[in-house]
Structure formats: structure tokens, C-alpha cells
Length: 200
Figure 1 (cartoon, rainbow, N blue to C red):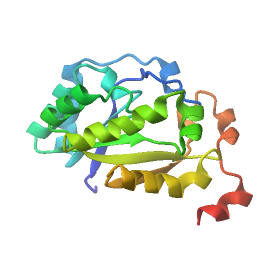
Figure 2 (figure 1 turned 180 degrees about the vertical axis):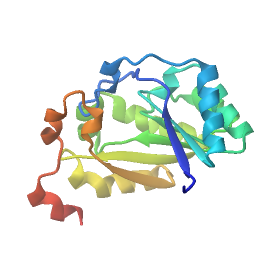
Figure 3 (figure 1 turned 60 degrees about the vertical axis):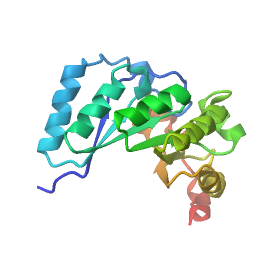
Figure 4 (figure 1 turned 180 degrees about the horizontal axis):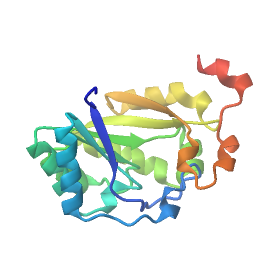
């Protein structure tokens, strides 16, 4: 069996946003204690994983996240966090740097208007501030985009924004019905087949 390069673990379903394309917070899954996630990290190491990605929900809502990041680093693996950026102020960026995080993925869905429509008023500005705080603390950042009918014409501008804020990578993820409690709502977000040529 091929060894996994990366293991993604969702450490909470809680979130401080109510995004239109994600119902994960509605699942209200029971959270596991720190010790359980430390065992999962050990399992990831035994499988040969080189990177552990902490996801959610919003993983920064867990106060033990810096400890879990340190656990990953102490085992010789890289730690990555996927966040909406709302909680990344100067102090949190410093805490993440001290914990040894390698990369933080910040969700950006397009222009201010598009992003705030999808994720909530004011969230675009918070995402940009998070990118700045990460850069100021020497933390590598990635701009993560969920491609949907609402933003597929804005992908070029997102790349330009990522360059402006010194993000090293841009990740485009197609919209997935896995994030919705009722998959029948998927059609609202999917790019129409007739428009797919604009993505090439």
C-alpha cells in the first residue's frame, strides 16, 4: 500500500461562521479529547504520513490546537491548519508560530462582495488581516478557494490577491455536496456545464 503523504483530521464541527456552502456545524459531532487526537497523530505517523492537516469546522475554536500542532512537530511531521481566519489576530499568529505550524490555509472565495455573501459580512477583511498576521510571524500561508458558480469567474483575481498578500500557494477545490446536510442543494453551487469552458 502506498504511504499517505498527508492526513486530514477534522477536530471539531463547530464554526464561527455560517457559510452558505457548508453545513458541517449543523452536524454537531461529539468532539474527542486531546489524548484521542494524539493517538490519531501517532497512527498517522505509523502510516508514513509526512503532514497532518487540522480542519473542521473551525479548528482554532479548540484551545488545544497549539498543543496538537506541537505534538505533530515533535514526531517529525509537518503541521497545517485550515481556517477561515477570523480568530487569527497578532496574538494567535504568534501562538501558531511558537507551536511550530508549517502552513495555514486561509479560505478566500473571491472579491469582498462574493466572499462576504458566501461566508458572512466582514469575513473577507478578517481573512486578509489573517494573511498579514501570518506573514508578519513568518508563517507560510495558502489561499484556499472552493470553486462554485458564485466565484468561478473571479479565480484570476484570487491568484492576484494571494500574490499581493505573499501567500505561497493557491488551492482550488471544486464544490462538493459532502459539505451539505441535504445534497439536493448542490445544484445551487455547481458551475453550469455550458460555462465550464471559462475555467480552461
